[in-house]
Length: 112
Image 1 (cartoon, rainbow, N blue to C red):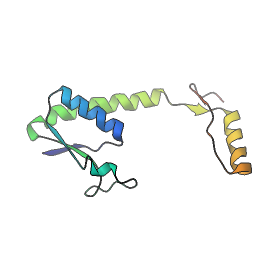
Image 2: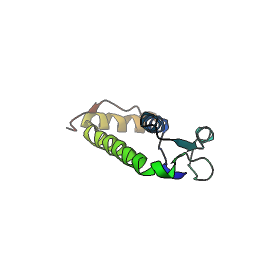
Image 3: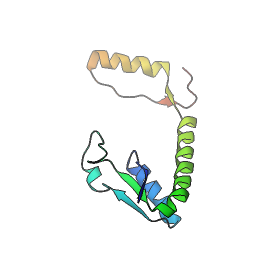
């Protein structure tokens, strides 16, 4: 089996597994259960999850995963949101006076 991809979170892992299942690509998730027990740094041989596929299915699986990752990256860029000037000032005052931070609403278009 060949290493295909190391997912960043549970959602990405579930999506990639569903894509591979729908295309009937055989895969194995190394550290699938153990990797979720440890919070913190992901160490490759200890707790980092790795999706592995058969050698003869690697090209197809790689193509599908690249398409998925490209689409999700594009979606994140398009929906990037920024805090308004008022929210930035309010959050700074809260941190200085009270020692807490409660994020405010985000503007979709990034206008201050």
